Structures are given as structure tokens and as C-alpha cells.
Image: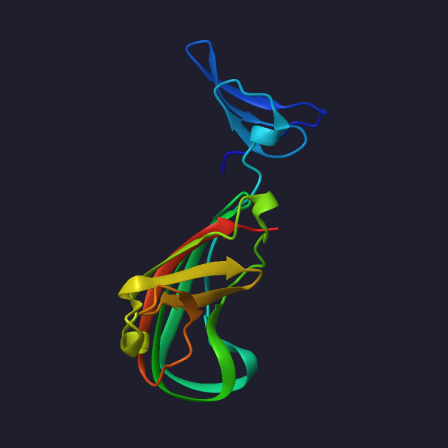
Length: 173
């Protein structure tokens, strides 16, 4: 066991060849290469799993899953997520389909937008031509959309059974 302890209200610094390479800042966080700005310090890192689920924008939906899994990495206020949902059946609810997320995300363009999602496998919504799909992160869910034959963006509302796999990233509040 190697223990470093600084009982002073100051930073702890690590050097190689007379150059500062790492600083544990007194106020918390790690900075690199002589950077002293607290705003640039890495002060949060987390990896984990969550159980994503489908929900509808209107009413309660019942969904049976063959499997579902989600993994995320959170670095500061940026979260990167991956999910895989296999649905065997669904019933109830109305409105557009949404995927639940492990964090609440910043919404509104004044905070850098809604985040970005990429659907890798959307056989769940195959009848909707999800090759022309779109989606966005809103608070604690991803809203699923597609481009219809008129070129308009509309909520994905048809489903049934199939798979939805994707990745997303965005800013948490």
C-alpha cells in the first residue's frame, strides 16, 4: 500500500524531469501538465450499468423484454451510453416511444443542445424506415423519431417486437 497524505490546504503535485505532470488540487479534482484552473480539473468519473426501458409519451405501456442492458461512462458532466433492448411484446400507452436513461440531461439549446443518439439496430421500428431515424435526449429519456415519406420528422409510434440498439452522449445537469 502506498499512501500520500497532504495535511495542508494546498495541492499535491507530481513531477518528471522538472515538469509538473499531475496535480491533485486542494479543492478537489486532478489536473495535468501544470494546469492550475479548477474549471479544467477532472473531478468526476464513473462507469456503470443501468436497465434501460421503453416508455410512451402518453399513458402507461406494458413491455415484455427478451433482454435489455445498458452501460455508461460519465466523465465530468459528459455521459456516454450504450444500450441493447430486445422486445418480445408490448401493449398500451400512446404517443411516441422513449428510452429511459440513467441520468437527467441538460435540455435546451442554451446549454449545448439535447445530446446525440445513434441507433445501430432498429428492427423494432422496421415498418417506419428507421434508416431515416432521428432522436434526441430530453431530460431523462431519448425520444425516438423518424422521417416520414413527406420528409417530416414524426414520433415513432409503431412497434410490436424486435430490437433497438444504440449509443448516445450528452451533458448532465
